[in-house]
Length: 152
Image 1: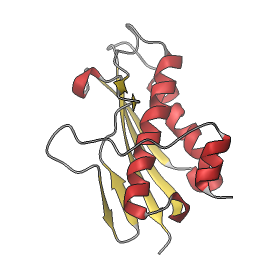
Image 2: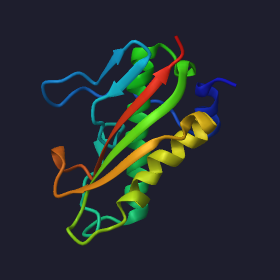
Image 3: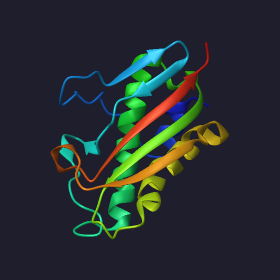
């Protein structure tokens, strides 16, 4: 089964690659490694904004993290040609816009990690960081980076 078919079965569609909001490219490939730039939770032109622990629930953050992960996968596909070339998800870095006392960053970024596991199985298991920050570009509630290894 192809990765695209798996996404369809999960009721998910890859978006177009999000346009950069500053002076960078959406991702870069170096041999069999692909690194995405930080991707925001934008879906159908709508950015999920907010601060966890203030005006967003963990569940809303989790869903936003899934959306940001899909945007990362769109970047990977644009560089790899096909998500079927993903041999392994190596690392996810997640930033969560949150209040100083918010401590559930890992639960928010689980939205991305669990999606990658559903899509890639064992190849979706990865190292990860989930970091709380005081703000993110455009008021986004989260931002994610993805590093993957491709088949040659």
